[in-house]
Length: 213
Ligand code: NAP
Image 1 (cartoon, rainbow, N blue to C red):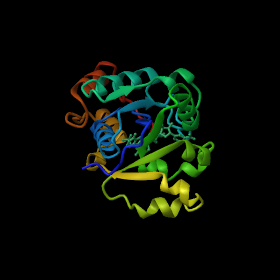
Image 2 (image 1 turned 135 degrees about the vertical axis):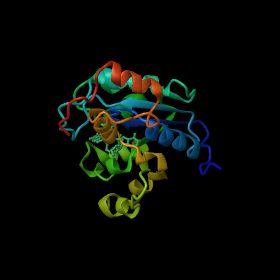
Image 3 (image 1 turned 30 degrees about the vertical axis):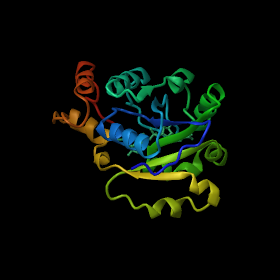
Image 4 (image 1 turned 90 degrees about the vertical axis):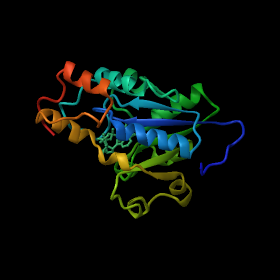
């Protein structure tokens, strides 16, 4: 059963933010669970152009990550993708994305879905207090994640801001992009960790054969 009540006049929309290098079933399950729990009309996957705080130099191109994400979401009518951050280029600040989306769609109530590990760092993000007034956060947790870490690490936030961070448990998030890249490099199977068509794209484009992570 869903835990959220409808708010009249607002469309609840999920923005699934990540590097998606590559997108995998953990991301897809997390987005679907968030959509269900928070009664979202749709979830838009937004691959970051150059995520702030990223130092990996071998990251796949934005176009490749967008293409893999498009392929992965194609079988879910509630899922779509946006190239807003890739078109904007430069560092992908979430506040810029959320404000741009709300300007075009003032009736949207945005839920920014991302990994719980990412949320632990939000105090360093651009305009975080404003961002938490403009949207909710949904932190997707991996098995073994200690929920109390969120309150503990984010204790500088106001009570109101903290209350806008929701969590969901996603057992499938035991899958990780880092592990998939490593498996490809070591010639180990990645089947059943991500959609077949994304797997095909990875091999056809010779992704992840060299490493610097
Ligand atoms: P990341 O380093 O790629 O990921 C960190 C951890 O979170 C990884 O374990 C990752 O798992 C997981 N994760 C990432 N996105 C996820 C998602 N949507 N659902 C579930 N787990 C997820 O994180 P990132 O891509 O740089 O940042 C995530 C989002 O936050 C992006 O949209 C980025 O632009 C935004 N961000 C904004 C700011 C800012 O505005 N200043 C700063 C940092 C990040 P996998 O590796 O398996 O994906």
